[in-house]
Image (tube, rainbow, N blue to C red):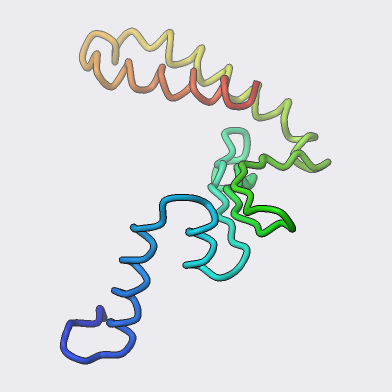
Length: 127
C-alpha cells in the first residue's frame, strides 16, 4: 500500500530523498544522496534457454579515493562465455525464421518489422 501525504514519516523521507536525487547534478552529488556504493543490474534474457536470466550490464556508482565513479560493466565469466555461442546461434536462427515469415510480413508489417528488429538487436548485443 502506498504511503499518502499527511505526516507519515516514511512518506516524508521518500519525498525528501526523491527531491535530492533529482537535484543531483554530478556523480558526487548523487553519491552523497545515496550515501553508499550502489549498482543496478539489467536482466539479459536468454534466447537459447527461455526463462533464464544471464545477468546483463551493471550500472555502478562507486566512491574512490579521489572521485566518485559511474561506470557500466558487462561481466564475462566462464558460464556466460560458454553460453555465448548458444545465444548467438539462437539469435541468428530467430532472425532467419523471422525473415522468412512472409505471412506475418503480408498481414502485419509492423509486427514483422518489430520481430526482425528484436533479433537484430540481440545479435548486435551478443556480438
